[in-house]
Image (cartoon, rainbow, N blue to C red; front, side, top):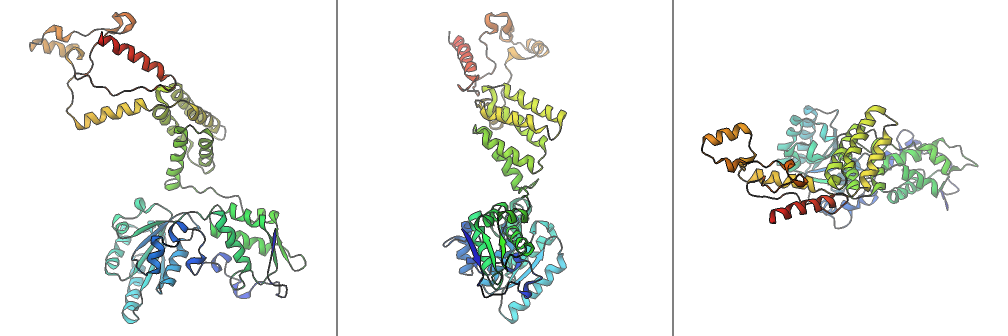
Length: 447
């Protein structure tokens, strides 16, 4: 169903006072209720909501993708708590500017009894000295610090600053939360396009919201472009699906080469293979390739997964993973993506076993926590045996039984002094045959 915004008696023109300010800036929320999404931290009863409403917070760090409202939320917090709002940028600011802002905050606190929220965007760009400059003033309560970053602060922000702050992660704004924001922008006479005659098709607004990929700023910018570049028909700007598709570019996949998206996506890829879901594994593979991930990194992870997750249940998986890595080196992109997909599907659909990987872990744990076992006399080198004989060790104790001299190329013989066991085969795939073989060999010890 189409929606028509603006009373019929209003002139079809933009408000002149907004001619130089982007729609995304004009529609920036002023209250907690206007913030799109983020209900996981802002819903009634949530910790951050309670801290803001009770005016009981000191230092906060928000992290999340661009366009999720980190700056906006900081501004709303300052407004809600009646604080001054000062901002700095981690790329452009220096220690002198930090100290100037803090000195101004101290003055307002002394003369007007008003607190200051010092917001620092891209806090991860501050070096250690810049971040350390803040610490004594946070301790004294001179400013209320709010930092914002697109990187995980536990890895990219100094530990002393993180330990003094509460960390909240902002999520991409879901499509159902973006659509009402676009409607509100069309209806708002003061900040939006409420004084224009605009007929916006529902499917067009849903398209803008979906293609914005969780970025409220991008959705509003695309809407503004659609409105301002579409010629009116009988004094009405009509925004249909075709106009919406032209107004928003193909979304750039949210991905960082060394941050959360990088690690989260490769984690989802490997876990999908481990969980035997080829469709999910192919999706995460496609996302990484589309976003420009290094295919060699993907190939290395496939080789690891072939041994860690498939292992002896299908030993050909390792061969296929290595072949895919070599094929990529030979082909390059874009054809190199094909053997990567081949290996991905094979690994995802192969029987699974982590028995060899786990067995190594058990053995390493024994070595780490216990005494190092002595190599049995019959397994030492010939040179060591000569030394042992000279030391009075009986030759019979040093007799090594050569397996190939016996039927089935096996004879019972101890290879660990305490007979420890680490490897427990599964019954998955080819490993079932390994289990049967081991049980047969062990039975000969009992005989």
